[in-house]
Amino acid sequence: MNTLSYIIYLLLTWFITVHVGLIFYRNGKGYILNLLHGEEKLTLFINRTLLTGYYLLNLGYVTITIRFWKPVHTWTEVVSSICTMTGKIMCILAIIHFCNMAILLFISHRHENTNTNNKNIIL
Amino acid sequence: MNTSLTFVAYTIYLPIVIFLTWYVAHILFKNSKIFMQDIFNGKTDIAFSTNKLFETGFYLLNLGFALIIMEITRNITDSQTMLEILSTKIGGFSIYLGIMLFFNLYLFFRGRRISKQKARTIDTYTPASYGGK
Image (cartoon, rainbow over all chains, first blue to last red; front, top):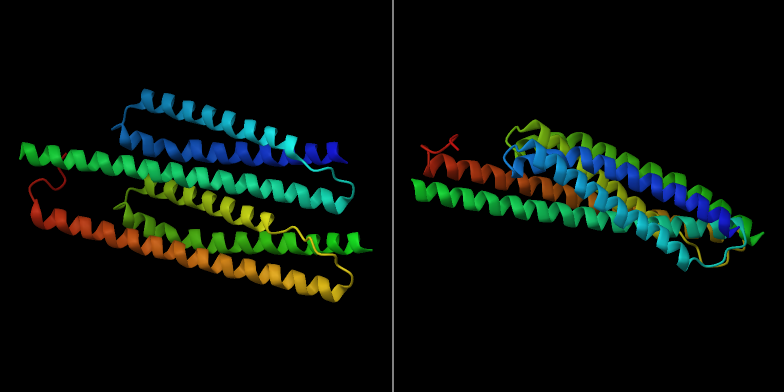
């Protein structure tokens, strides 16, 4: 029973992680491009590095959580444990995601501020 | 008997919760594109990707929360208890979802106000540099 739930859990969480990572990868490009004022190569490199780091971190964590699994005996326990663990992973992903967006926002604000300061000095 | 009733409760709870989350996110983020375009002054690609990122975050957070609160620890003896527990869980989740919805709306309105203010200050104070580098 435990092995079965591990397999279902791993399939589910890996699918979610990879899917979400791809969405971030595609949509985050515009941001980084904006920050770096359109340097294509550097953007591509940074984006790919970020994606790899994200996969390593999350898939690693997902796989580690199997160690803390309670023994399950019935189908109900299988469903409830899988759902609780997946829920935790999804919440962690969401929190990391929002932190990332906040950091990006902060960096772009600072960028804007320095830009306007430079403009004022030039003016 | 107990186990199977708990299982039935899970199978009722999961589709309802997933449908609710999908519906709310669908309505919210279909209509937020206009806000996003306002916030980013018509930069369509960045506006749409921000929208998509927020949508993904919304799904992750709410579905994750729904799955975390799913576990029923009490022993279910009859269908009445099951219905009571289910209604408490689903009702609580709906209220949470409503709060998240209004919080998101507040964020959109705030972003729109700030970006309009910024545009106005640029217009009034430095008309020469507007549209420059």
